[in-house]
Image 1 (cartoon, rainbow, N blue to C red):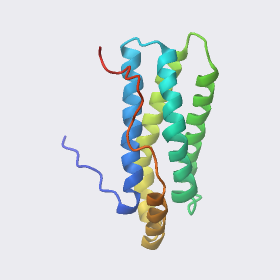
Image 2: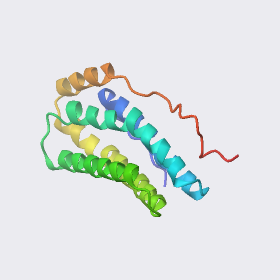
Image 3: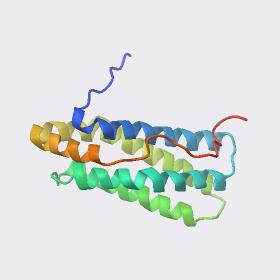
Image 4: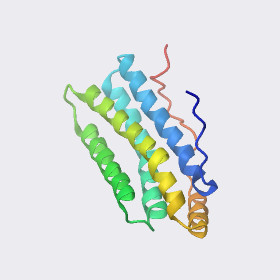
Length: 160
């Protein structure tokens, strides 16, 4: 089966690029778990990513892209944001033995969320919003600056 890349409206390409960054985050968590890296070490990376990327990305989507749509697909994405944030909050406070399990759950939630937005929500938004609305959103999104590369120093996912 030969999958073609998704063609995204130019005004929301930035968010799709950020989604790639999020999928890489999930891969790093899974790689760390597979390599039996201590959960506390992975959680430090999760905190870094949350602070420097994820919270801002969610805010950007909710305040800019989702603002004009109050329908079920957007509500589902916002609900997923809340679930991810809730797990992030629990993870940073939790010190018990199931941290690796929670990290795996986090990676799954973020991965599922990104795929939902890319495959279902963004096409819905592209069809629903008028070109002028998408263009205005694109201008706002491009004014926002975000972590452009992962500069986290402890590359626990790299085999030593």
